[in-house]
Length: 392
View (tube, rainbow, N blue to C red):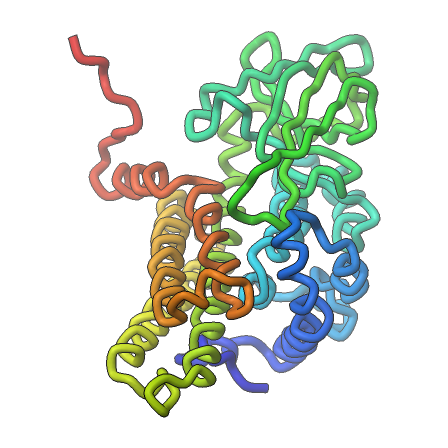
């Protein structure tokens, strides 16, 4: 079981053999059953429903071959890398369930809710997505949540709007964050088909075209109190979930960079100009080396971050730094990959164009570069620079 071409330092070997075997089998399935479907769906802006069953049936969150042993956090990260090196939308779709939804239930639910629902999440018998961002509030969502909730006897009534909610049409429940009359932030598992819930697909995207993103409107939506996440009563509780989730995005950014590098490497070895493969030219090799260096740096960063989190060390600046650096490395990697593929790099045929476009979404979602920079800057200086006084 060998490392990927993009894994020069063989981080894959850090996993135990049974976890490596699961990922090797996943890798083969993705290349055989998923990859051939992607270009057509990327161009049409549709989601390939045919990939859902192969992904779900493998129980990647609790692989049967581990004989009941909980898989390591490093395995979960490398699972995201394997998915993203084939396609960022596929990884984002799966992570909506395995990362965003599951983490919110485990960290935001009561102990009883987490115990009851987590097995259903792992088996995809209970599916959901994370609905935090709003049309007018993204980076300032901590103070800006405008969606409201009010208690009405044994239920809650929700009103408001959410935006950029990926995978909502495939979810049974939407994790909706809302502010109550006292200003406290609450979280609810809202039935996607409940009266008053309207989903509208966001059109005309130029990035993550396979992933279906939605605007969601909530108009007097009633939610039974039993579907309120009992562990969330403030944005600090939401931030605790985000702190754990951000490492997933760093792994996805790293996987997408690996996929772009490997696609570029294949192309340059096959493409001939002046009587030889262009991979034999000095300037092309320099770019390949730079790409591999960027990917290797990102792999090293997310591996160490995950090792820290496995020890119970969860700090905002750690995950923010990883997201900031890996997404910037991704952006540079895909630009170089497109460059060495020449004009063919803007077509879907080389495998590079999807990564080149999708990098822009990854660079911005789950914490923009600037916001993550400010989180790190606050940690290293002790000075918060998020809000500046208006000039007089």
